[in-house]
Image 1 (cartoon, helix red, strand yellow):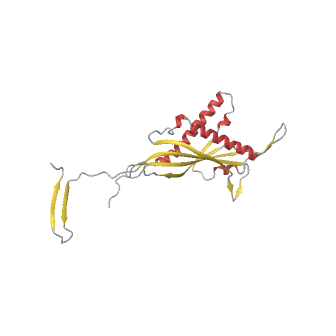
Image 2: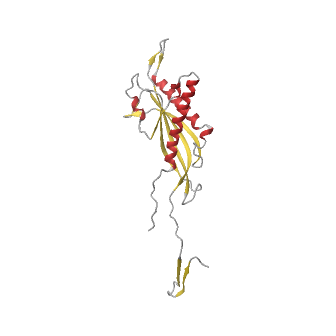
Image 3: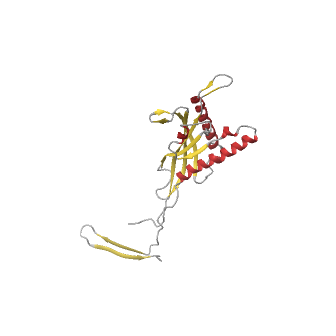
Length: 226
């Protein structure tokens, strides 16, 4: 039975794509905060904290104090991949239509307004989640990120949808935390190691009649054939 001669010591491109999305967001958030400072605006309004494959990154907000960082949290995780038969071949390369979930979480305090009135925490949390969606969408759909800066590996990207949801703990909605899930579709090339073919040196042919077993041809061919 044949086996591979090479160690599979690599990441698949769906994994690299996830980490690339995180890198793009981290670098662009820092850039946007710098641009905001230069424009005499509050840079914290452009701040996002980025995680990958975290289960419940919002749990750090369950016991918040005034010292807690309430900057929106972004969590990127692989949802699924699909390999259409018409987009690749059966051995070397296949196109993988990957769906990444980009969860955007916002949290806020409920507080009274000095001038009068009240700011409910649930509404402010929703606005923070929406702000995170806005920043993520604008960054990832900008022209410089058409191929997530991995042209040749990534065929394209498209935001399919986003949906707002309420995080749950112990079957209860968590107060003053709101999430929004962006579905980002990315097509990447996937490659697999191949068996290195050996040069054929000798071909033996032994053909028999099925009916009586009579040998009708027996031949050896040495390669290269002249």
